[in-house]
Image (tube, rainbow, N blue to C red; front, side):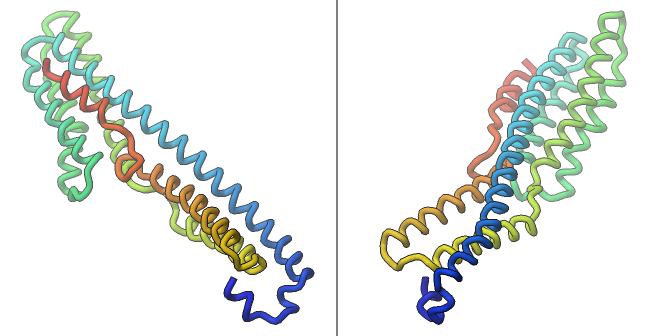
Length: 230
């Protein structure tokens, strides 16, 4: 709007306005499509991760019950499972852990737990079945744990975000260039900018499913933690 006052009249003529409107219409369409697709894709990914957390919690309880059914000799393994879950919760839903501590914590899922189960000595067919199922569940949990760990990192491409913001900025500049300088026009533009910024903020928040304002609840794994060992 301020730029308009410093431009020659022929730069803000009806012909110039129509030319800018047509060009910026294409940019606005591309920006709207890209923003809509990104929000939909990120929301779908967020819902998928939320489902995976529920499945992870269910498998935890199942593994604990399999170990309990095997016999009292699995008490140490069940304690290891509970301790691994506690550290896993702190790693996925907390920030600031070092890479070394993260690797060490992950080792209990991929090495210590499966090895401990494999060392069990079944005495009958029932215990053999429980051991086999427990070993399979431990492998699944180790894989899911790494998957959740990798998904806790932002995956949104910064260049894509910069390009989208650039497109949106162009559209608002083009509108402001030919808008009257009154309170209604200024208020409408500010509200429109706030709405678009809110969509981008939501997009970035959904891309960080285990931190920020919009995050996946850890209640399922906390509930599983209360059940483990009982």
